[in-house]
Amino acid sequence: MRLSRWTVIWLIIVVFLISILAAQLLGIISIESALTNFYIFMTALLTITVLAIIGSVFLGIFISHRIFSGREFSPFEREMLEMKNNIDHIKERLDEHIAKEDERNK
Image (cartoon, rainbow, N blue to C red; front, side, top):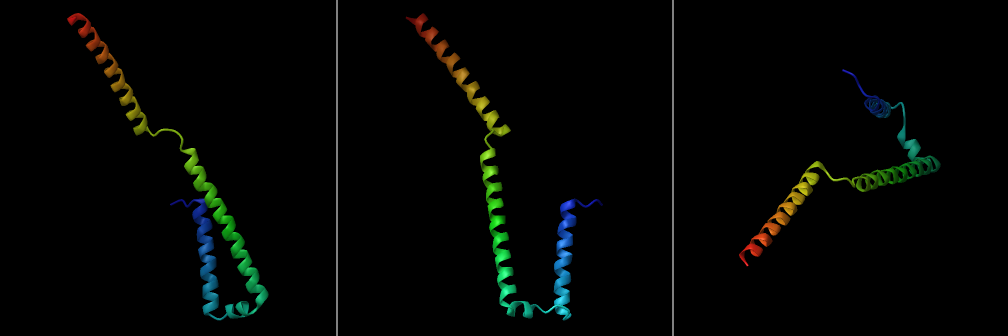
């Protein structure tokens, strides 16, 4: 089984976070000391805020790109437009035929 690059990156991140959790549960790392230090807390809060804003901007760009780039018709829509053109063509021919019949009957 071959793993993609993104799968490996996410696995590394998950393993890193699980190792931090295990280190805190075993008492190797003390999260309380980081929370009591005001500067560390503010730096972490600022970092998370900046990353959230950057992520939301990129998500907005991605969504708007997907919305505005879908300007072409789908195959189903193309088929429906072709059928409408065929019906219009048949209707024109039928109107011509009816007009010819009316001229003959006069």
